[in-house]
Image (tube, rainbow, N blue to C red; front, top):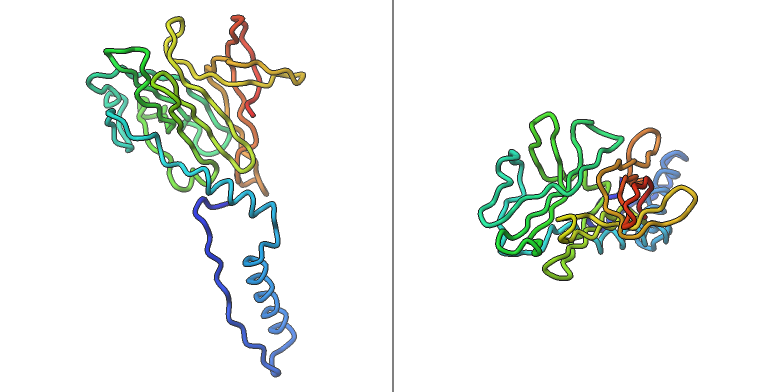
Length: 234
């Protein structure tokens, strides 16, 4: 599993003794090779992947006048004075505890419904009446989350997993309220742009049956033509 924090290589000090056994010599040479390889970057693709992950730090949404702590809380605590809470979408996943779903919440100004004040992607706990909670460090090894706010009415939320990027544009409009829009690839290879995502499932990539990243993000959405589509992001 790749780690989000940058790894500082450590050089091992190994003394080769003339009295060492062949097994000891092989082990020592292996340590020397690994240390040199880490410092020199023997796997360029792995180094590039680490650089991409380091550039996409899950720092959370930018600071605003909205105040809601990033901590586990009951659904009732999502109501904040001066703002209206909206559950934008909820998606399942094919690994871990099935009662834990991923939810995207948004808050809009009560005085200006066109102003999206905050967006947050975190856990929805179906077995605890919709309790919310932040992703653990273990979970965030699978992906990073990047929030960008181009203007008062829009947020861009990216879920970044290795070389994959799943992008949602969260915005307010008079016809649909708050929507998460995405470019969705449908069977056959065609793409539906600005498709309003309702839900879906995140599928993990695995090694020997152990999740180690995001393989695909499947969604259901409604296009600007009013037709419902099923497809994938990215």
